[in-house]
Image 1 (cartoon, one colour):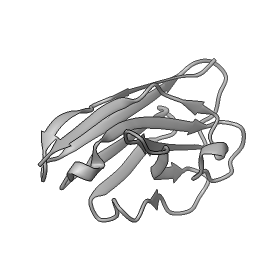
Image 2 (cartoon, rainbow, N blue to C red):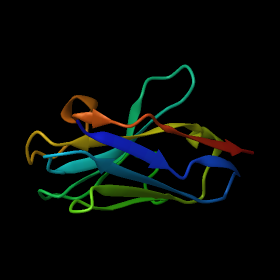
Image 3 (tube, rainbow, N blue to C red):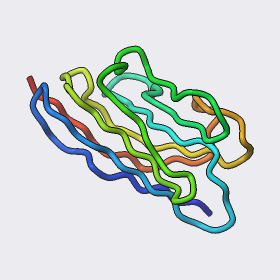
Length: 125
C-alpha cells in the first residue's frame, strides 16, 4: 500500500509565499507522475500542477501560472509546490497525487492512483 503525506500548509497574508511538500512511502511501487490538486469550500477538486518523469513539461492551471512552481524527485518519491504571490482565491485544501500504474503523463484526477489527505492553505486579504 502506498501512503502520501503532505506538509507545508498554513495561514498567510496575500502576497506571501508557502512551500508544500509531499512524500510517498510504501513497498514495490514506481513514481511516474506526481501532482497537486486543490479543493475550495463548495467547489470541486481541481488540478493545480503536475509533473511527469516520463517526459513532457509540467502542467500548471492558468490561475497559478507564473506564481507557482512544481519540483520533485521521482527516486525519492517527493514533490514540492512553491507558491508565491498568494491570493485569497488560492485558499483551499491542497492534495498530493501520485501515478504508479504506468509511465503515462498524468494531469486529470482519473490518471492518478494514490492521494494524500490534504494540507490546508488559507490566504487572507
